[in-house]
Length: 135
Image 1 (tube, one colour):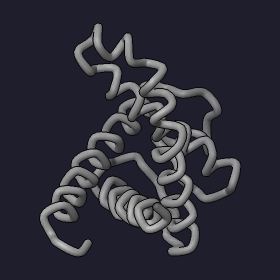
Image 2 (tube, helix red, strand yellow):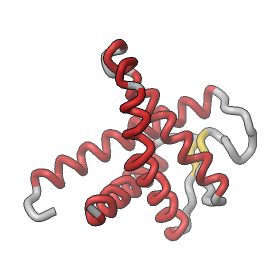
Image 3 (cartoon, one colour):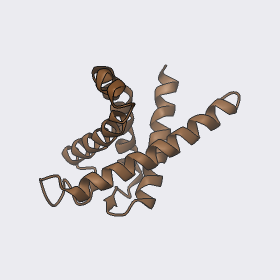
């Protein structure tokens, strides 16, 4: 269980690094310690908060044929940015929350693109993990 959580944190950290490299208007810490803390925060959000939100939104997920999952992913990225701002980690989406306290369309677009890249990278890493014996 602990190894699985640690592996999720590592996968989320790699996915965050990839997302920051490819998504414009997203800023993440360059310090490896802060990036590790950000990966831990994001991994814990995805491990504990996301399943609760998904379970509560199950009726909406059924009605919208799963499109609510995209909204949940974007919300989890925004929550990670808000927590990282409180911890002074330096993760910002479209300048939020560092420069402007209000969430604008550029923040939502950046969060959507980050969640999309993270989902793709995490899916590929999970597939590699499943296909590689012993990992």
